[in-house]
Amino acid sequence: MNIFHLLDVSAFHLTAIIVLASVIVFAMLRKHTDRPQNKLFLCAVASLMLQCVFDLIQMHAALLVDQYEEAKILLQIGDFGYFLLHAFLPIILLFYALFVTRRYYRYNNLQRFIGLIPVAIAEFLVLSNPVLHLIWGYNENFRFERHWGELVIYLVSLIYFASAMGILLFRWHAITRRRKLVLCFGIICILAGLVIQMLLPGVMVELFGEAVGILAIMIAVEYDEDLLDSSTSVGNRHALILDLHASFEMHVEFFAISVQLRNPELVRRYRNLSNQELIIEISESLKKVCPRYMIYRSTPATFLILLERTDRGEARAMAERIKNQLLLDWSADEKGIDLKFQMYLSEAPKELARPEDVILMSESVLPDQEECVVLEGADLKGIFDQAKLSEVLRRGIEEHHFKMVYQLIYSADRKKVAAAEALLRLHDPELGDIYPSVFIPVAERIGIIRKIGEYALREVCEFLQSDIPDSLGIRFIGVNLSIIQCTNPDFVPHVSAIVQEYRIKPGRICFEISETAAAVDYRLLAETIRNLKDLGFLFSMDGYGAGYANMYSIFSMDFDLIKLDRSLLYAAQESEEGRVVLRSSAQLIHDLKRKVVVIGVETEEQLEETKTFPVDYFQGHYFSGAETREELEERDVF
Image (cartoon, rainbow, N blue to C red; front, side, top):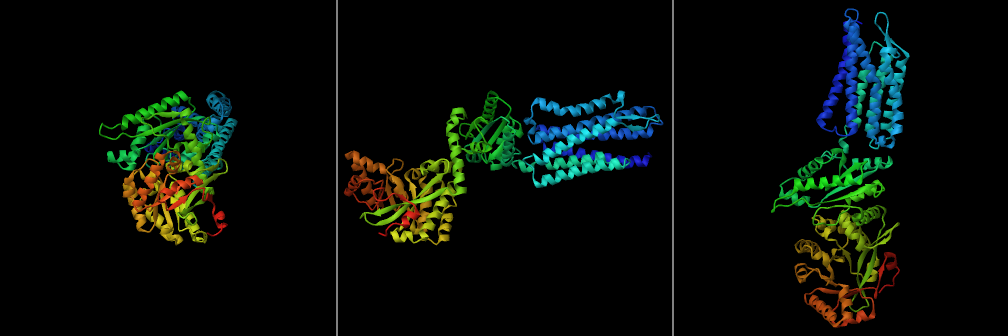
């Protein structure tokens, strides 16, 4: 081997070292070296770099062995180091693949020990080679000779390497077509380098091929930007879902700690931060307590921390440390605004049986607390129920489990149909019928009330397009609104666009706001009502007299109709005072030029109570119950 040929061969090794050094630098700059698999990957890269160094030593020493006695020592050191690391690298890659796919936890200690036996045999052959010469040796001229043990080393390496790549390609939840293509390219490079060097011993490209393969693994696996939240560098929702599925599949026990921010908007404004800056700073507070790779941002205002292979005591201690750190970092002065947050701690799979349960729990709204407490165990029963109902609501939208029924409203002469109220119903295949009083508050909390409201409005518009309302004498239909819908800035143009799409006159739709909602924010509701009434829509207050609003709400909001709460009618049957309240309320509304609607009329006796005061409309089971569109179509025309 001449000096020019040595330089040619060294070029492959030096190029491989540059590639591997670049990989290490890139990994360190990203600062994502905290996971066990990250550390194993860096170990694999460092091992391959050392192989290149030892191979360079032995190549240079081989040129000088005839001239210097010391070169023989360097030659033996180079060969020994090369084979020692060559047998060790594949097992690192296998453990790396097991950690990436979380399959490492699927095996017990005995199974792991058995898996290490082949590499232990290979390393024994390397370590004993200076005495036994089972892998390589030297002739009388101190030239390298291969022995049968080298075949064992390569066979063991091939088994581990094939297992590692197979696990990544076929058992990794996060594998995508792009990642798979990059991994396959890396495998081809590694195999090509090995085959070329076997067929052409003078072209020593094996280590260069392995370096390119390592680079491909970094691009395919370590470069996980699509699994990270762009603002905080913690796991995003997609990463959470993938890791949860892997944990449940591998039967890994873990605790989930949810941190839900309750007033981020107020804190952001007070501290003059952007949304992104606020979330970044909060994530940094969490990172002070637990490693980055344990943290996920499941929703814009919710972080989830997963603690694996720990007991409840340690998990509870971690939750307390997180709480105390957030209180320390985000407590304001006396005039400022503290960050409000609430937390829960739950165990999987004991309490959370599926990945979906963990996601639902992280999205469920916890009950308001004056102080932050970590809820767990029995304290979370209501949250579990709410999480189940949240799933039912989402499924109801996707699978069309909602339906609309209508209760007719009669004019004061009690003989003619004048209007109807649209009532939304939900029938779940598992839970059966679920009424609005149950599912509407949950829909508001989890943010799908707008979808439900749009469904209801479209159903009513489609019904008004038919001949049924006109044949029954229905002049308008009441549609219930949530306070969440009314305070949405896009609500008015969105509603107007839907009604125009169906070519329905706005005056045929009467939006209903409950007295409870009207007591929340007079100004916002008054503005919404005014804007919709300018377009021609009608408005009514439902449940007046329930005790939440006062007369100011009637004066400030231009309602067309006021529905007296059924409790007033029931109270009128019980006492003279009740009759006075009912009669006075109806008279006052009538004097204010609003239409009076008495709801909840179920008996002849209740109807008699209404003869002493002005009434414009009646609604109740005495006249008609809730009916489907098909049932209304079969009715006789009034």
